[in-house]
Every structure is written in C-alpha cells, then in structure tokens.
Length: 234
Length: 234
Image (cartoon, rainbow over all chains, first blue to last red; front, top):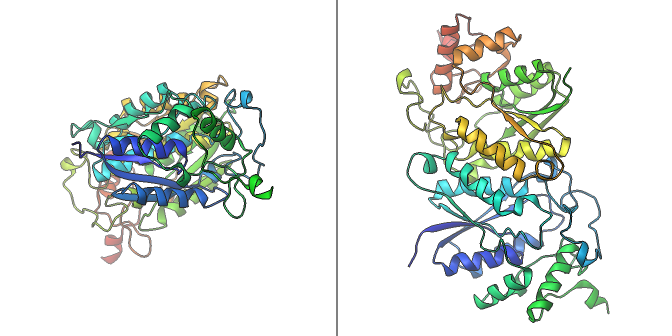
C-alpha cells in the first residue's frame, strides 16, 4: 500500500471532496489544505473541517489568505452573486465568480507546505469541463505549474524528489464526478457548494455553483442530499 | 514615455529597492507589493513603506501571508539566525533562511494583483548569483513562472495581454546591483537587509544578509550607510 503523503486542496465542495476520496483510495496519507479568503460565510470552512475529520486526514491546515485585497470578484467582494443564469451560459466565459490567480496561489501554498511535510503529491479538484471559464482549471495550466513546483523548490531541484500535481477530475463532468465519489463512498450531504448561503448556512439553489450541483445530481440519477433555502420556504 | 503599470515586489532590501528603481527608470507606473509573513520584526515593512513613498508609487499593498504556518525556516520560525558564516560558504547550499516556495507564492499574488489593476509587468529582485542556494531565484524558475502566469489568468489566456516577469538583477553580483542602484539615485540608507535586527531596528552585521550587504558595498567602493548594532556598542 502506498503510504506516500499527499497535500489535497479541500474547499468542502463536491470537486475537492471527491478529489480527497480519490487520494485516500490511492492510499496516500492525507494532508488537507483549506483557505479562508474573505468568503462571505464560514459554511465552506465548516464543511471542510468535517470532511477532514471523516476522511481521517493526518493534518488539516486552514490558511487565511487576503484574496479580497488582491482581486475583485463576486466571491470576495460586495458584488451580488449572479442568480438563475441559464445553464447553457455557465462556463462559456470567465465567470464573475472568478478570483484572479486563485489556483496559482493555492497551488503555490500547497507545494510550499508539501515541501515542509514531505508530501510531493499535490491533489487539486480542478475541472476543465464545467468550469471552462476559469483559465486556471485547464490541463496546460496544471502542467506548467508542476514545472514551476519542481524548479522552485529544494525538493524538486536538489533532493531528487519530484512534485506531481494531480487533477484527477480535470476531464470529468459533474455527473461523472458525483458517480466517482459515490463509488468511493463519499457522503455528499457533508459537502457545500453554494456561493451565497442564507444565515442558517442553507444553499440558495440559484447561484452558478448550486445550478451545476443540482444538474450534476440530476444527470447522475442520484438524489441531491442538499437542503436548499427555497425548498424550506415552500 | 512608457506609462504601463508594473507590480514590483518590494521587501525593502537592496535587491527589491534597486528593482523598484529600475522599473521607475523604465517609466512604469509603480504598484508595490510587500508581504508581512511572520518576520520577527517590523523593520522590513517600515523600510518598504518609506521606500514606496520616496519612489512615488501609485499604490502600495501590504499583504499578510501566513508563511510561518506553511514552512519551517529561520526567517519565520524560532530557529536562531546563523551568524558569522564564512563568506565562501554563503550561497553554496540552500540556506537555512530559505522559505519553501516563497517566490512562487509572492509571484502568484503579484500576478493576481496585476490582473486586477491591469499591470502585466511584474518585477522581482531575484538574484541567482549571491543567492544561488535559493532554487526559486534561478532564471529557469522565472521563465516557468511566466508561463504559469499567462496560462492561469484571464488576461494572459483570453484578453491578449501578456504577463512578463522581469528579474533585472538575476545575473548581477551584489556589487553590480549597488552600483546600478547608485547610478539610478537609490538612497540605500532607506533599505534594510538584516534578518535579525536588535530591538532598536539596527542591523546585526553578522547574519548572511548583513555579510553579503557589507561585502557588496566594500566591493563597490561605496560607503555602507547602515548603522550596525555592533558598531554602536563600541
């Protein structure tokens, strides 16, 4: 059994949680890395904490990164989160929820932490299909970053270690991601996708992230365990 | 005159200050970016603030990055800063003051901020000669990162902009860096190099950074304007 260590970027959503399950299934000792970055809510962090516990990660590091000072984005600014965007419009262009350079910053921190703890396998739930509008979710970006990781570290450049950036979901649809997660025993009730939950932490059901989540469960033929705020109101 | 915008990584030391002077001389509108990252002292931040003012930067962003949580290093941990290392031993191996992945994280933030403010020229004072022990100060690292910057951003990948990572000091010795800065009017009395200043903020004169600084001024035939703690004690 593989007992190498892996750093897994864990936001607490469907993609990163499935990625965590993949890394666990491959036998890695798990080091989960979560970022707090001026999100409007703590719900994502709570989900990540719970998931880290459920998956028995060796260590869970939560880093505060001031992305809101760096870039303008609906995820970190006071711009309203877009709601009810037609499905066929999602992912066509770079979405308003894009945070400039986010994955570059996240991967840079993951590699730095990986060098510190001796984890040279870095897992990211980047996905080129549903989020084609995010330039830092494409395979060529991941490849280029792997090169940077190996050139920019002691481990990669001098100690004969080799960082590998794993993006196991890169070419999967949301449906395929969910089916993969289910086959690995993921309890998606523990995950959180919504960009704009209500004060009780319930998903809005109408932001891009909720729409993609619902569509994914529907297409997978799996009941979505999420309790949406709008259903409660009925 | 070039009125493009440039993000300049500014620590307040000799290299980053000279880099700021180079960018100013090339006519860029300056956006200075400084990191607070668990350093033992605020002296570097103060130097950076003063320099940003003196150079008339358009904006100075100071970001708190929890590098001390990510990696072990004498710069951010409680390991004593090495003193009185023989000059010919400095830069031979990766020094204890190496912070894993530091320049990758810094450049990632610079590119993200650059995308936000429309600054596609990123300046870093990386230097391969005096600091050959830092893997993330080598030309091949800088080149690889430039590729990441262009693949991982909206500007680089969709909007026809092209990020360029400038490392104008990459092949200069400390002596050459100082001579270049002097020719551009830099007042090095405003800069700070020491890893381990005393409570009054005076440089120790004995850490690797002080030794390289003193050697640089000596070789350049320029008086070092720094007041060292040890001299005061005499």
